Length: 191
Image (tube, rainbow, N blue to C red):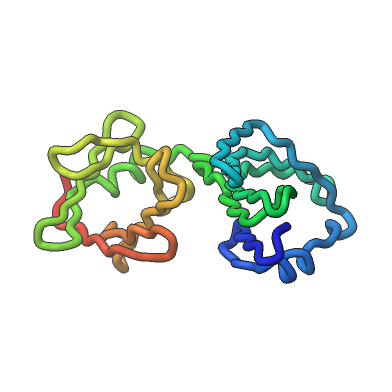
């Protein structure tokens, strides 16, 4: 590593060379695993090399099999004839959670129009055994359930819709949560 190298881990921690090297330690007892580089691309520009690779992590955690995919970017620099790692950025490739099937009556409770502002609306409608949702006039996407009242759109694993209910159990709106930031939607009408 270059003396002033920077490492950004999958949790967003930014470490200099010394802190990064100090953070390296073996997996605890009961855990083992390995990384496999499944895709590797290098672009060289003079004495700088830009690397992007996808890594497949497999871990045995006390007999449980865990899996994660990472997208890594690295910057290498040739200094005095020696290639040194100058920067690493690790990104966890997010995946959709498993979806569950909700009963018909549960699906019907979500159907309606929601508003988050004077000119911001969102529509949920039912088609057979599933929900479709989107902005009026825009594309409608499947809305899937991770758990009762926790819904998501396929292909958008960073976003959850947390539905709220009144004392009688009727859906009154939802919180659109992305990276801990919330937009509150209120139900304005049932369809």
